[in-house]
Image (tube, rainbow, N blue to C red):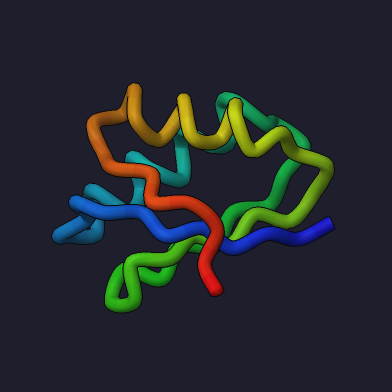
Length: 68
């Protein structure tokens, strides 16, 4: 399963790494790809949207839900 989310507050590569690491901690088996310019994060794997949202927010960023 693959899902793309909108994440706010990412302004640099360090932010992108922090978001990716937070998601990987919440879903270790998932593959995470961050598109910093678009403010989107793609997560491939069996993941729980609630856990992803919580991980992103605990890392200090905004979780704006699934990208359309």
